[in-house]
Length: 72
Image (tube, rainbow, N blue to C red):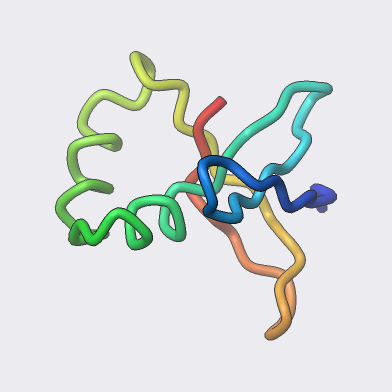
């Protein structure tokens, strides 16, 4: 399970996780924070996962471990 770190960026708090010694950002909270629809954005990312480097990472959350789509 990945460890997470909260980072402030332009007044917003982003969650960063380390995976294979690289920083990744869970995309659902990021996309939702921009006011975009998660399902349509996930479809775009998953449609070309190799290009974007999308990776499913298990992250500890307040409701227990959850798999999240993350980008490097």
